[in-house]
Amino acid sequence: MLSAEVAGKTAEGFSSAPHASQSIHRIPALGRADRARDRKAAAASPAPEDPSEKVSGEPPAQPSEGPLPRRDLWIAAGLLLLWALLYLPNLRSNPNWYGDEGEWMDASWTLAQGHPRVDATVNDFLFPYPYPPLYLAINGTLLKLFGNDLIVGRSLGAATALGIAALLVWIGRRLVDRSFGFLCAAAFLVYPEAVINFRWARGHTLCGLFVTASIGFLVRYVQEARLRDVLLAGAMCSLAIATTYWSWSLAGAVVLTALFVNRRHAAAAVLASLGYLALFLVGYGLLHDGGFPHLKEQLARLYLLANGNDPSPFFEELALDVRYLATFLFGTSTAGGWPDLWLIVASVGIACLGAAMEITLEIAYLTAQGFGWNWSENQRPLDEARFSATYIIAILAGMLPILVGIDPLTLTIFGMALTAATLPVSIVPFLFLMNDYSYVRVYRNGWLSNAVVLVIIGLAFVLAIVAIPLQIFGGS
Image (tube, rainbow, N blue to C red; front, side):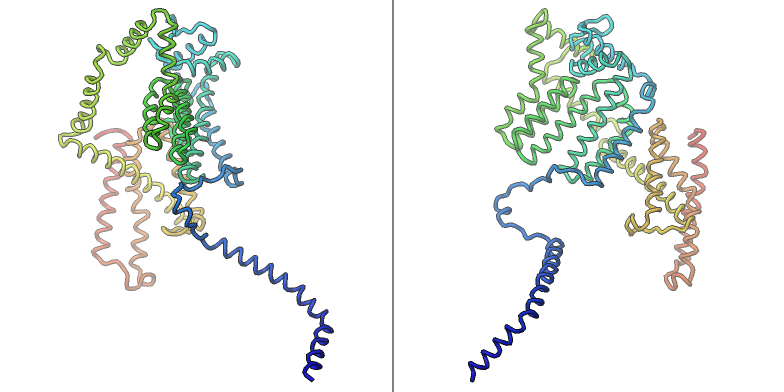
């Protein structure tokens, strides 16, 4: 009886097989949805830590050098446009002619012609013009290809500015992330001194490119401790020295970094960073007329040209440098010594930063209040885009006076006075709001708070009205 019942249920199950197959076809769909939910949950939750990574103590892997996302491509295109707008227009006539440009251009052109000279003086790359040959060779080659024109030398300087910006993106990405690298590049490109100096035809621009590259390889060497990176940093240092002798101290940074990371790499760092300088001095002593005694005479003349006195022994010169440093730190500021020096530095920094924040935010506040836009102190910039765009434009507009050469300190004082003069316009409406019972109920200001605010606003307004004409027309 039992077996017949089991057999009947089994036959019933087989007879309903088509319905079972339909339910089976629905199971994979549910499985795909579950897997999709699991993938989303796994992406949202932090990945579990690997105990082997803690034990190994190896540095975290650096991000891959893959293709740029579309957002980063747009940012890179914006930086390229910013460079073109700041470094290319009116390159022949702006900035004004700088005396050293004539020497660099003349030395480059004569080297390209095969008889290196500066005016009537034979250029031996030491005295009286200590210009190493690398920039002269590169600039001379460009002059020979495109013509002996000032705009060729200045275009080389502008191109090196773009190269430094690209290197800063790379360095910033290795230090923090790519967005930080873009920020570093933008800060460099809009820096007024960079805009001026990289539009001149001088070897310092190319030297800056090599120095920045050397620092970038040093950063990667500290992160990954590979011999290749310290050799590349040293090679970039040698190229910088071959462009401007005054970059020789970078070799010390390369060697000290190698000693700190891996002492076995120190010898290679010395050879790579000082290789050009050693080869040049040895080659000069062996191949030049007069040999090493003449090299010593040229170096002594160069020292006299820079210092105006007889060369002193090394330790005497070192003691003199220490004395100068101590005098600067402790004796040149005020009678109070070094505390007053740092107090002055901190005061100027706080005043400039405070004035910049005040004037830009004041413009944004007044504009937002006038047009009824959203603004606050704790919302995302995306939620108050017009307010955020206003103070960003104000910051960019504030750079223009510095670019045309206005004294930053005078501009800061004038901006602070102008801000104080506009305080009644922005603060007085708030006083009415903060004392309106229908808005703030029992949290209204007291009479003492209102009186203090009115006195401060009145005093600041009066001082500003007096200070603004003095800043414009002069006076003390």
